[in-house]
Image (tube, rainbow, N blue to C red; front, side):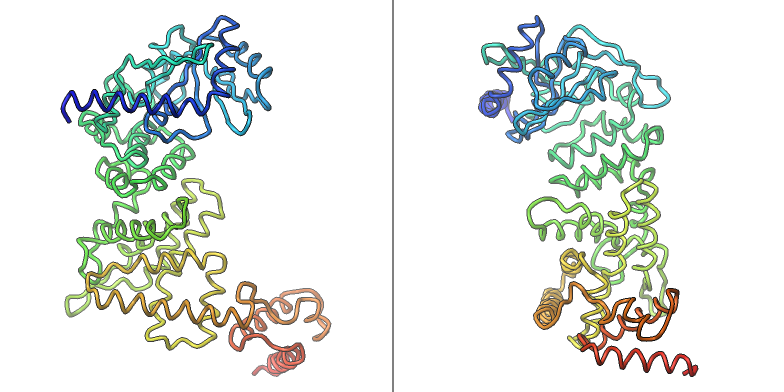
Length: 484
């Protein structure tokens, strides 16, 4: 892009940002006026300015000001519908009004302790001093909000040039920035995913050299960045960068570990590339918003292959039970990253089930097998459908079409059985109380065993009348008592 073209695009983007911010004038103008009345300046800053320039500003707005935290709190309490000051010791006060959330922070001039990422907070007196401490230049732009509704674009670090070039670069030397806060390395990868930008060469090199510093960061903060990365618009490029820089080896080593394994069909360079393809195809099947569980399951579905790799006599490679091993690995890694239990179990279950369909063959599953497939998937069934379809990456068009048609047939059978019975809630035809009454049992493990028998029977034969269920249970109990 020539300098003239870049200048013209800069002008267009600034005009677009002005139009975007105009739609927030009901919030921005009154707020700026309140700060001006107290003798203070107010600036929209950071990601809010970046996203306004890119035309993707959401409802959360970040500001900075020369006002001290106590003054910010007073202004917001008189303006907002709700105010919270849990970050006031770091100079931040937040408020909500008319569906928007604002976060206002006093100019900062942080000094880091060089051991953790925790800053020793000191308040600054200039906008430039506040901007230079930020992670990347694209996040170091500001818009001064005037009391009369006017706006002044402030870009002392030339973040707009980086934005126009699609580059992620630091205000100062990246080594200094990352030494202050190593999480910024992972944030850089995340911005690659969210914006489709590339890392500046010096930032990429510093990340490679300093990747080990990420171990200073808590797993909770790392998890947040990983989730934002996987849910971005360009996650494949970001995952590649995570691996290339060595960060993946430290935060989720199972991903680069897949590079060691050639997949059994020899259709991809390795399982790692296959998994990226599955992730892309799963994303293509999403309905609207990014699906965190589906995306992680797609990326990690084959992480059990390195541990189960076996070379066969005729030169082939097998990965028997890699779905079982993979599910265990998912649980272990995601628990280390302190994911919520529900997310851990959902991703692990999808990994565990992703091969089940391949036993379907030419549609020869019994109705019982179809019921078990649906029951085992439970509320994950729709995601399992997407994962299985995404996992078809063969370059053989005829084979790919046959696999998709076979899965179409399975889904059709599921729909037919669902019409005839409630597959979403497969339960025994007798509850625990009825079982105890029928068999004369007190509460205990035998009631659970009877309930499990009835559930298995329900899956095998479908809905039963109460009379048939009672007769089957009595026979099971008699056989059990007789030792059969």
